[in-house]
Length: 388
Image (cartoon, rainbow, N blue to C red; front, top):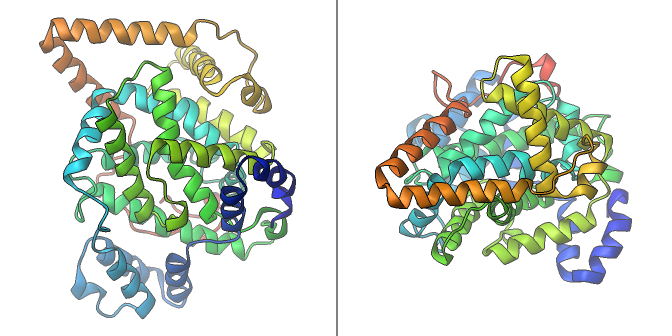
């Protein structure tokens, strides 16, 4: 067991030994299939590697024909959806997300990403600098992935949600490869970089915990919509390489994994503090706010909402500015409730509001003119590498 997890595991084991053991075991595991691809492709030049990655994700079998065997096997294995995935069953979750996209994106940025950075996954992102140096771009990429998997058809084989999920998996595998061979990575203390445990934690947080935090902002979903939301993330997690024994099914499963995972994890590190505060300070820039005064005002509001969502204990550990959050979430819930009432009275206003939300959502997501990029990192540190 990595030494950083020793104390936390003892506490987590008292709550749920079986899950705690699964979690800490996974801190020493990466993604065997994707890692084999990266090991194999290390022998080839960047242009050929990028061509094979593009061919595999874009389903171009002729261009993939001369790829090495592990690469061809990787793409063949993920070509078909697992038997438990029902394409029709994801539609209620898609509708629920886009009906409440503003609140889901808000909860995602102000709470769920921050709570993820409180774990040792922050070490990986801090060393590479791909969040600290390219924070705005990274946040827009995260937002786009969230948007795409919740578009109807987004997780179909040729959907952008499917493609981005697999792209993320391969990017993580490449960064894992670079970190594993770096003297900056302390494997004895931290385990495997971008481990299976952290991928499972992220999927659980982006699904079950996101539902919980959005509910704190006034989002209300039916049981069917909630189950559909979870199914979307279960499949996205599968595509991103989460092992079957840590792949969540229900919101209760997800929240339990987050709970036990957080008990296993050490207290937030300096890297957690830097990434979390950097995330919040980059959000107004992502939103396109140019005025310094307006950016500072919005940053203060995000800090207040974030503290109210994640709680004072974690907020203080992350060196948030001290704030009184009394009534913060209640005011947001009241505003959302009044809007819903108005939209029921005037459906046309509701339609305009949803259209406005969709446009806003697109504006805070990364859509490059050339489409999805398939280049893998060439260097460990972002400042020495081209944009991804």
